[in-house]
Image 1 (cartoon, rainbow, N blue to C red):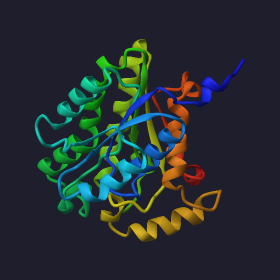
Image 2 (spheres, one colour; image 1 turned 180 degrees about the vertical axis):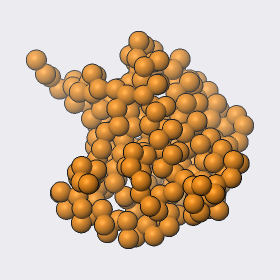
Image 3 (tube, helix red, strand yellow; image 1 turned 135 degrees about the vertical axis):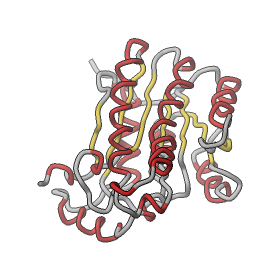
Image 4 (cartoon, rainbow, N blue to C red; image 1 turned 135 degrees about the horizontal axis):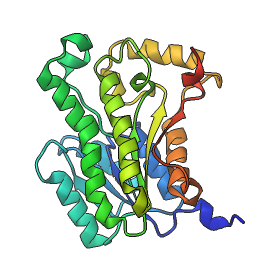
Length: 259
C-alpha cells in the first residue's frame, strides 16, 4: 500500500552539478527536489559564472555553494569532501555538464580531432563516472544518480554532430554504473529531454530550427521545460523510482517516437 513516503524527499540530501543560470535544466531539477523537501548542495563553474548561479542557489536554499570545474584537478573531489563534512551522506546527485570545443562541435564528426573528441568525452561523460565513484561511499542507504542526454545519442540529428557519440558514451556509462552499483541500492538514470533553450544548447549549429522542428513533431505539440525535466528527476529520486534504473527516460512530449 502506498503512503506519502513514496512522494517526498524530506530529509534527503542531494548535489546539483551544472547550473549555469535560471534557464538550466539543472536548476529545474534543483527546484523540483527542493519542492519535495530535499536539502541541496549546488556548484558553480568559476568566478565568472558565480553571479549567474548564486541567485539560483539562494532560491533553492542551498546549504552548500561550491566551485566545481571538472577539468580542474581536485575541484570535484573537494565538493564531495565538503558534503561529507557537512552531511556525512548523500542521497542523489545530478550531473548536467557538457562541453566540446567549438571547432569540433560545429564541424563534421569525421573531421573531429582526437584531442577535441577526448575533451568532449572527458567533460560530458567521464565526469559522470567520477561523480558516481565519489558519491558511492556517501550513499550509505542507496541513492540516485542522474545524467542529462539527448535523442542525438540514439539517432542522427544533423546539427548535433560530435555530441551524438559523446552522449551515447554517457548513456552507456549510465547502464554500466546502474549494474555495478545496483547491489548497493544505487540507481542511475539518463534523462533525455528534447531540445531546450539552455545556454549549453545555444552553442549548437542551427539550434533554433531544431527546436521549431521538435515542437512541431512532438505528439504533445510543445517542447519540455526545465521544470518538466525536474519533476521527472524528483519523482525518480523518491521511493516511486525504486525499481527503475539503468534506463534512458525521455521527457520530450513524445518527440522521440516519431520517425
